[in-house]
Image (cartoon, rainbow over all chains, first blue to last red):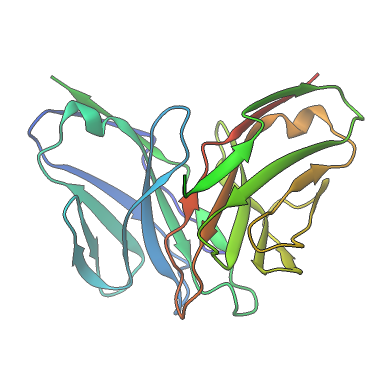
Length: 113
Length: 114
């Protein structure tokens, strides 16, 4: 199993960029990296997914270096409503034998006014 | 409303009792998952299912039983509940294509075992 490690918490201010790094040294060739956001009393919600290099959507960017042993979620210009826990998930197609899904422990992001 | 729903939202039971958590999705997604979320452990996969009548173990399957007789339902049963199974349980679903697809999560069931 790919072990994933994230910082436990991060503080930021409104309007700043927040970067959260996930370490996954044992990532397998067919593993993807997916990030989720979770608010209290709710299930996680999909933010972004990537395999290598850079992926960008309307809410975030995901940077994955060539060795793929880490990934960085970037949240541009955060607002108070971005206060949440962010999870990194590493995993490949479940149809392949031995492929499982491994969530990181989550990073609690607090955005201050 | 379309989506994924879990029931009950809260449950208190006693050790040794059997308890079943329900999960229902309206998207006709092939894959469904059960996770438990505990402080200090994040989300850990209990079981998953690739289609009706196809299930497989995740990281922490001991003490749990699942079934998937219909595509839209994926119940999780604790046959003899223990205090260590006190947790928040999340069900999720995803489409099935070549690579891993984003999972859609329910809002969870908070289970307390006394």
